[in-house]
Amino acid sequence: MTALGFIGLGIMGKPMVGHLLAAGHRVSVFDRSEDSVRELVAKGGVACASSKAVASISDIIFDMVPDTPDVEDVLFGKDGVAVGVKPGSTVVDMSSISPIATKDFARRLAEMHIDMLDAPVSGGQVGAEKAILSIMVGGKQEVFERVKPYFELMGKNIVLIGDHGAGQTCKVANQIAVAVTIAATAEALAFASKAGADPAKVREALMGGLASSRIMELHGERMIKRTFQPGFRIRLHQKDLNLALQSARSLHMSIPATALAQELFNAVAARDGLDLDHSAMVLALEELANHKVA
Image (tube, rainbow, N blue to C red; front, side, top):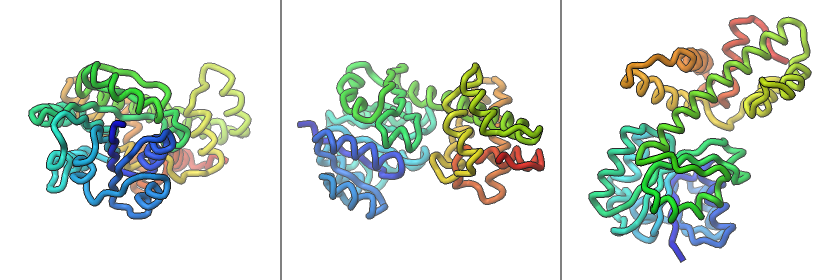
């Protein structure tokens, strides 16, 4: 049986590991949160003291951590994967990070005879818990086929986009679309509510037409019910939109709707909202309207 490793057991990583364990796989795990490790050990996981330790006993090493510097530390830090990994192993980075850095990480690992896939996900905590994530993959076809059976335990829509970095590019595009749609949903509900219509009834009607979306379904309800516990934190979506804006500048293109969405997130963050769910963008629009959606 292929030995699996998983580094990063947050609100996404922990349920993803749970699905691998439930399918009968041996999974070695590492995270700074001892509670998360204990929970997964109780389900059959094997606790490790570092990323290096995970890599030393795993054939395929997954990681799911917040940002580009975190991935670099997991892979190439003092007690990182690169110190303990065996030649011929595969690294699968499921974090959402810079496409440019991803290409560099893949090159550095290839020099060590290690394959890499970038495989960021979309679907949030609910998608991770229900194993219905969308997984966007960059890397070689043969490596993708080798890892795909494990992806299928964590997600439903699994697409090889292209070579190294293509998965991360797709995730940036996803985060642009999500942020702009959250802004549109929040603006529509704020408008309807201030105009005197019941926002819950408006949302119900919109769900039957062209304005229907998963954002309207899930986050529209959050906005109306004021349930802003994450989910997906504003600070993480801001990080992804920074990647989008930086990449757009390097491509000499304008993405104005993305820039506006980032400014709305900034307004919520300025009022101690960094750790709210990204649906809380509506709070910035409520401030501008001097009216709460409720």
